[in-house]
Image 1 (cartoon, one colour):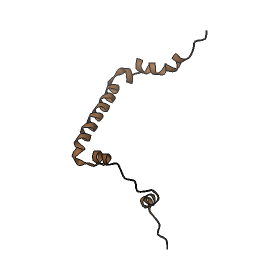
Image 2 (cartoon, rainbow, N blue to C red):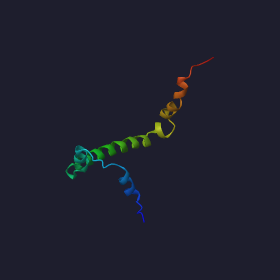
Image 3 (cartoon, rainbow, N blue to C red):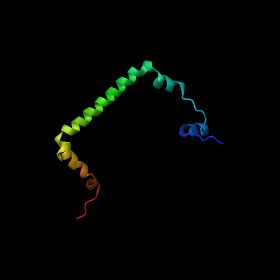
Image 4 (spheres, rainbow, N blue to C red):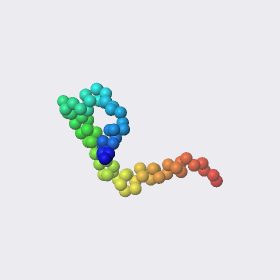
Amino acid sequence: MPRSLGGDQLWSAQLPNLQKPRFVNAIFGATELSWIWLIARVYTGWNWLEAGWHKVTNDAWMNGGPTLEASGNVPLLCQSKVD
């Protein structure tokens, strides 16, 4: 009776055995470098949160201020006026 392959086994049976480049393993696989990735992720996350908080607390974004009004008028600026 033939043996059926599971999902992961099926893919590994059809694809060639590809190896990651050594520098990829060195950068992403070494636990000694994890503090560098921690700093990069915290810095990126802080900037993302700061930008989002700025938009939430700014009246121009939340209460229909000139920022939102200008974004709605962009297609009108591209049209030519015909009298």
